[in-house]
Length: 102
Image 1 (cartoon, helix red, strand yellow):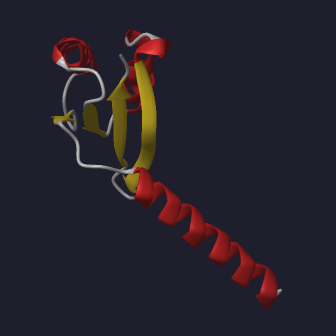
Image 2 (cartoon, rainbow, N blue to C red):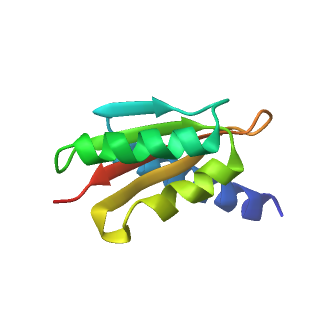
Image 3 (cartoon, rainbow, N blue to C red):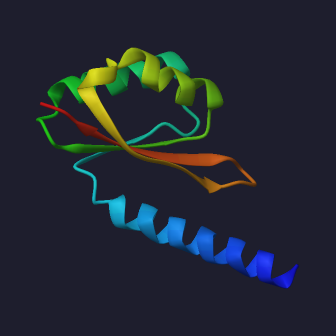
């Protein structure tokens, strides 16, 4: 049992390191924690439209509805998802990075 737990911990640490290597400093940051969904989505589309190709947008949020709607307002072929991470599970706070495609 201990060896299984050790293997799971090693796998978790390896995945964590690979996610960390994908993260990069964002060119734009939007903090939607505590904001109204419709206003957040409007701000997202406006910011994304103004971004140049290959720039990275980081989104911080706490509303599950906003998180799922983020991917509905942007065309699938317009961005690359770098990562989606839950930062604080107690207060539910997520962090998303998107890279704008050409």
